[in-house]
Image (cartoon, rainbow, N blue to C red; front, side, top):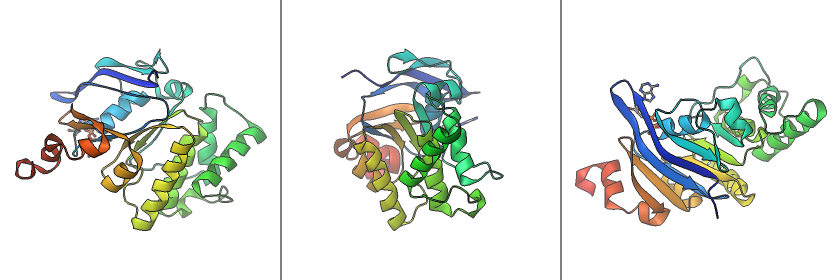
Length: 242
Ligand SMILES: Nc1ncnc2c1ncn2[C@@H]1O[C@H](COP(=O)(O)OP(=O)(O)OP(=O)(O)O)[C@@H](O)[C@H]1O
């Protein structure tokens, strides 16, 4: 099966710091792949380059065989890529539904009026916020903000979803709900790249993992193998644990 997302030799520098060094990997349609690594290893920078939020200093990003490397985020979105952010940043003056509605405009097949509202209602229901579209976003508790963030990403009707620590900060019962939601998307055939520190979620969701350390890819393979790889354990925990 050909790759749906192909990352080749991605490279990013911030002044003297090389944040991402020649990182390559790909995702097949319907795969859920974990992008792991200790803090500061370059995961979010990779996500930002895939989504067009940051220009690459080298390398390429292809979606469904098309080169999207130099495109701005709204153009990458038109190719079927959506993301959630580590910190949920809703537009505070808009309602929950209006926040989600904005994404419909950036969808691959933008809709207006009732058709757009139907998408908003469907996505709010999917994430567990049915009937709450008219609420102020400032009323939402933490997990509901996460749900809204997911609804916003899904309203763009992506084929590839980039989840940047979407499960972070949830308590154990909320985490179960969050994992179930991602599994539901998995069941629908969504291709997902998951940046995550919670190993319970990685084990439950990811067939395969890619691990970065200090900007480089240091491991890739089936999750069960990668999570036991001494090189990966050392990168996370230091020499004493390898
Ligand atoms: N806009 C920026 N300007 C300068 N340096 C940056 C910028 N963004 C990231 N960095 C640096 O690049 C490196 C990689 O950061 P990045 O956020 O991609 O790591 P990460 O693996 O996502 O970390 P975390 O797990 O903590 O989110 C870090 O050293 C970080 O400080």
